Length: 146
Image (tube, rainbow, N blue to C red; front, side, top):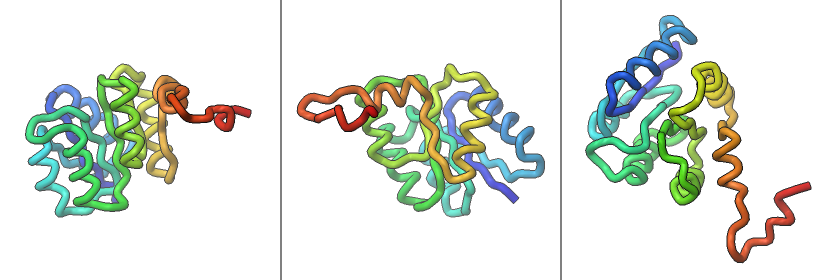
């Protein structure tokens, strides 16, 4: 049985993600958390995937994501967020998360992203990939394009 941990401090978002996952994976075990401490408490159980908001009560965002990863190494983590600035994206990519999903995406794309991550892939929407590949000062970006 597939198991998911869905973390978001907004009930509507938690419910929408849970409903999406229930439709995709009937019978899946779904656990929700409304803040980082609740998420940390649930991570004593194994999960196949964690989908978490970036900014939630109870922890600084990057520290919270790091603790989720530390508490269950090997579990794919998708960060869903309304933030898409370059610094945040770079910080998240440095944590080797399995995906970044902007809250503005269509449900069908979110569904495809979840399936990709569960199959062992990594999901980055085009806008995030553009940020990740943006030229950085002092870096030879000629190697990034063919």
